[in-house]
Image: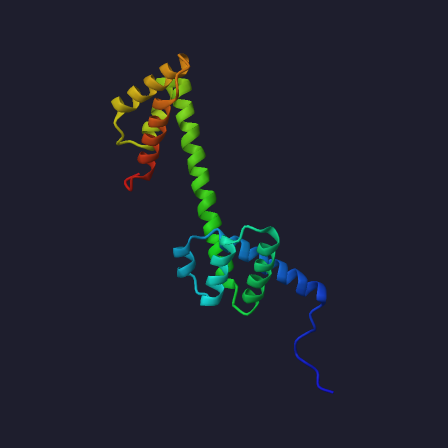
Amino acid sequence: MEEDDQPEISKSQRKRDMDELKKLGIELLEFSDDALRQLIMSDVLLEALRTARRITSNSARKRQMQYIGKLLKDVDAAPLHEAVAVRNHQHATHTREFHQIEALRDKLIRDGDNALPEVLALFPRCDRQYLRKLIRQARNEQETKQPPRASRLLFRHLRELQEEPDY
């Protein structure tokens, strides 16, 4: 009798591995077509992912995800896992930056000119007068219970300052 060098994988482990591949497939569905094309994968897998997006029936989508998991079993999934991890990290970073800008805007509206030195420390080359104007308008809107147009402008301005390469 010959013995294999590889240990036998239990049925439970195979199921867990398959579930992991289905989860990877679900995460790949969130990628745009361009992002999917940049990943190294077979045309069959790419088409299966596109088809899964179009399916609206729950049971049909479940079968399609089974099929995608089966296709992923034959592919090296490490680069795909890495791409999903990078995308998730970028999304988390973007969300964190968004919340920081929101908090800074709220602080500027709440504290007015007292919070201005913090913003000027972060963005030394920003237009101080324009920033003060936006703060005054946003505070006035808040006091008179008007729609937050200036608050949105202030947020957009802070966001532009953050995205400038000089900072």
